[in-house]
Length: 330
Ligand SMILES: NC(=O)C1=CN([C@@H]2O[C@H](COP(=O)(O)OP(=O)(O)OC[C@H]3O[C@@H](n4cnc5c(N)ncnc54)[C@H](OP(=O)(O)O)[C@@H]3O)[C@@H](O)[C@H]2O)C=CC1
Ligand SMILES: CC[C@](O)(C(C)=O)C(=O)O
Ligand SMILES: [Mg+2]
Ligand SMILES: [Mg+2]
Image (cartoon, rainbow, N blue to C red; front, side):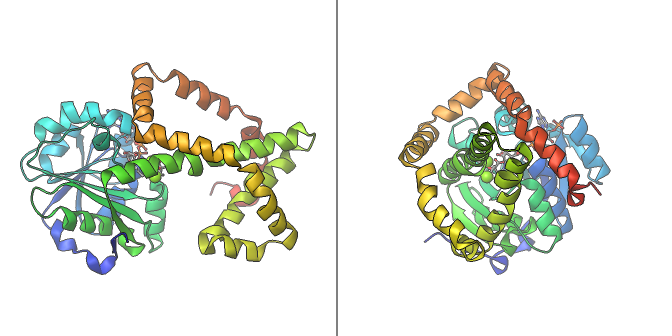
């Protein structure tokens, strides 16, 4: 069984007198930094001049160029986009690390695929929330937390796990649950989850359902409500109590269709595709492809992003959401 930790397993005193540099102030950077500060920890932000710098300053943080923030800190949490971490690490972080520092990540990509090789005289740990950064902040403000994984890559000081648990508590994760894993397991499962199910799988399934209905002559607004809007309501029930709770709430007709037609839609070829996707993650092919894509200015990433932004479901979705007062921005 995986080792699990809760609120009482973490000792916040481990972080007393320590400065945490959160490098990057995007989705995770902002959520984690605000939560840590509200939990009573000392946080500085490392950035380059630009939009995030201004945002972090407006949020009341002391913001420094990355190299300066690293010099001030005992714990350096790298929350830059994975594809930029290696370059910033080599030029601004590594030259300013000192013995006994703790280098942190929220995803194991750069360590697991060898893009960052830290010096041996520091701790290297991971606290990886299992949810988007905006939810890390929102749930913390609600008095709850997003679960997280912790992993230890190097334990030079002997305190690496205690620091990971105190940090996890600082961002609210121990209010939910913290699971112990390895950098390899987190990296491979996280990439698989986002590619095959959470992001890639779900958006492709929605598009396939929408296009099938629209191509058959049904109204696009109707198709949108059916395969996208209602999806959240169904997923909320699965999230609360699994398939059983969801199936308790739907009609018997829906349940019969679910049980007999679902496996036809997600058939053996989908299982084979998922296995292929997982293999490309495990053998490093996906990581290599993604790093090379960035070296040539992301032609595939940009073209595919644009195509999806222009997809009919996005236009119809904006129009349908506009009709519903609950989506009006406050
Ligand atoms: N997004 C999520 O919810 C999750 C992310 N993670 C992991 O967390 C890490 C951060 O991801 P995420 O929060 O999505 O990142 P974002 O893309 O949201 O944040 C990017 C931040 O990094 C800054 N930045 C980018 N390049 C540089 C640079 N060269 N020098 C200094 N600052 C720079 C940006 O500032 P600027 O405004 O100047 O561009 C911005 O503040 C990744 O390892 C990711 O895998 C893990 C779990 C969930
Ligand atoms: C599901 C995408 C994610 O892995 C996440 C929010 O957990 C990410 O990398 O953003
Ligand atoms: Mg994830
Ligand atoms: Mg991820």
